[in-house]
Length: 348
Image 1 (cartoon, rainbow, N blue to C red):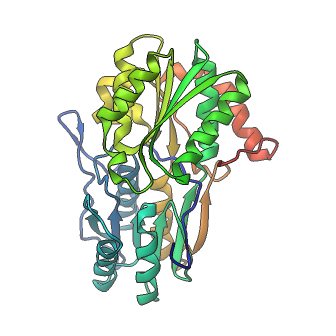
Image 2 (tube, rainbow, N blue to C red):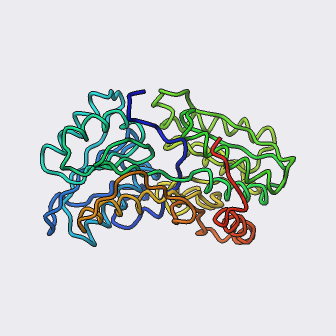
């Protein structure tokens, strides 16, 4: 790991991504802010490998970008990572934005950590930000999310909703960032039922970027869990999470899926399965992106570690499906206890 770069081991949730994003033919269409704006501020945003249309992490970032354009009049330039990325290609993408006058430049995803550490030093007058990582630098805002706290809440809900006492977790890449989701989920579930059994499966090891986009693998893994009496499953796996939702939906009544990052009950691409989505652990990437842009517009750029936790409304759980109403009291009590500090949630 390069000096000055620390990948945060905590993160989490996102949002309703529909504001500023369009939809077509029942699928999530690309969120499409304009390159021009009424403000002199021009924002450069570099997406992770999932890209826009993932119904999750990247779409949430785009929603924040679109809101900033609507509310603040900023111009926008979006660039998307490829599937075979290197630190050099990420550096080139960030450098292109900074060189062409975009300020702030926002990197979506921990994979940009090393590249951002290099490029930010080359452009000291540009404000940079990164989602889901901590990178040292006087002109860098590190946007992290208390994923373990939000996941604790949906763990409480999962345990309350489970009739079998057997629940599941589908992770994307097996790294500390995603292990924090699992850790919080397990702690929340065990706070309700100490004897609950949690089945966990990751879609790939550290460094395997395909882990975020293998829904069929996630579907097969979830089907295996259902065969072991799992009746509630939670995925923190990017685009792979769709496979978990599909398997839960196919299993029928009495089985529930828990989404992540965005309120996936309201994601158009998941509309065929929405009745099986009990809730989602929401990670407000949109709020963080908007706050970074507004800081630059106001002349007060966000720098240093910015932790979007429960107290800051940076994470939470979705309530769009009325079926979750039966479990809101327990989840809200857990939220209050975490904010008060009487419940401590570990990211490991």
